[in-house]
Each structure stands twice: as C-alpha cells, then as structure tokens.
Length: 335
Image 1: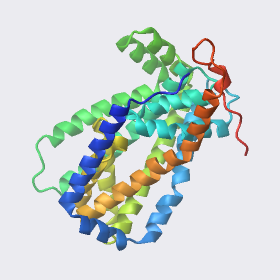
Image 2: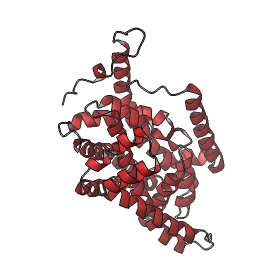
Image 3: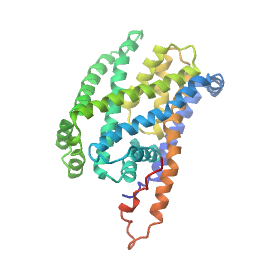
Image 4: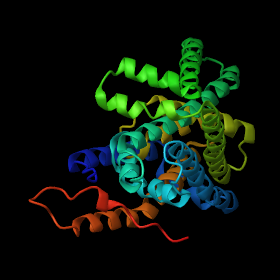
C-alpha cells in the first residue's frame, strides 16, 4: 500500500486555519497575559502531565492491539505500538486524522488493510463514546451554575443521550454494528471492512469500552493538570467539568484545522472560564496538551515514517509501477 500523499494545498489550508484561529484567540486574551501565565506556571503539574504521555499512547496501542489479535493472534504488541506511533505524523497532517488508518495498515501487514481500517474506526468510536458520555455527565452540574443557560441545552441533552446510547450499543454488539454499517453503506469495500466487526467477541467489546474510559480519564487528567499548573486557584472539580465539556464540544465539531488547533482552545477558554480559569491560562493549557499528546508523538513517529519512505524508494521499480506491498513490511523492532 503506498503512503498517502497529502495535497500541499490541503496541508497549507489546515495550517493557515490553525494559525488564524490561535492568533485570534491570543489577540483576544492579550499576548502579554499568555506569556505571564506560562512564566508563573507550576512545573510540577506539567511534569506529571508529561509523564502520562507514554500511558496515553500505550493505552491507545493496547486497545487497538487487542482488537487486531481477534483477527491475527500472532501479532506482537511491539509491532502494534510501532504502527500506532508511526502513524501519528500522517494523522496529524491529514483531514480527520485519516492518515492514522493508512499508516497503521502500512506498518502492520499481518492483517488486511480493510480490517485494519475497520478496527481503527471501532477504536475511535469507543473514544468518541467516552468523550460524549463524559461531556453529557458534566453538562448537568455546569448548567446548574449558569444563570442564563440557553433553552436549547435540554434538547442537546436529550438528543445527546439518545445518540450516545445508540453508539454505545453498536460498540457493545459488534455484530449489530456490522449489520448497521452494511445496511447504511451497502458497498463492497465497506462490507469487507465491516466483516471484521463480526469477529470481535462481545466480551472484547466490553473491554474496549472500559479501556477507552480509562484512557479518557488519562488524557482528561493531563488537561486538568496543565490547567492547574497555570491556574493554581481553580477548583479541581470545576477543572474536571470544564475539561469534559471541552472534549464534548470538540467531538461534535469536525476537524477543520491542523490537530484541532483553535477549536479545542476556543472551547477551553469558554468552558474553563466558567470555573475561574483566565482565558490566557486556558489557552496555554490547551496548547500544551496539543504539544504533549499530538505534536510530541508525531515527532517521535517521524523517523519511522522516513524510514518507511526510504525503504520504499530503495525498492526496484517494475515497469514504472509501484513496488509490491509485501516488501514494505518492517523488520521487527528490537526490545
């Protein structure tokens, strides 16, 4: 499978939108305040958030690896981890992080590409379900402290719980997800990919949701710690509620910027501000989270991506065609 080529104009557009969104927020909160919040931050909380990065990435790889081994039990965890980390640069640079799907399929050749994409999609839906449940739970106490809450919020709660319940049901019953997807999208590639869901035991689906909830607590905790570092007077409970609402809002908005830059930051300024976090501090915490959980893993995965490209380019061409996919399999990394 050839590596995806991100159109330069698309990457440029996403980058420009991200820069414009962040620059607008910095202008609103004043650059001097942004720098002051950073200079006065408590590094201890930031270091704890940094220490949780391997836990976050490890949980992501462990979840996906369990799903992969329902199809191919011989796949090793270190190969799964390599595929997950190696796909981060592609995911960061492509719309909706679709590069993750292709990257994992390229790195892990033991299972069909369609199965890899389906399992990655299932893993992402489990993360989405955790973000939606966490946000809907947080909406209750948030609305109780709002003096002039919009009358639309009750409708959001009702529709949100109905949609989230349906999503959770599809995750808990993979056979039902298979039927639903092939009914809504009756195309041959979708049928091939969705067939992987029918091979997932229900107990594994329950484990997937449980692990997704644990990972949700981890990356939400990182955000809370980073917010606490720049806003030491903010209440812990208020930070957890605000962070849950940030991820809830971000999950409902399609990715239109590089790594969701600007979307997450705007939501952080709005929701964390309700609990006493200054706009500059909320912006700093959100940008730090982007650096830890997206930019840092992408940088770590870049050498793997370059190695894969160099290996592909060094293969002999056959009549101008792309080289066979099989030689692209990477050697097993050393422990």
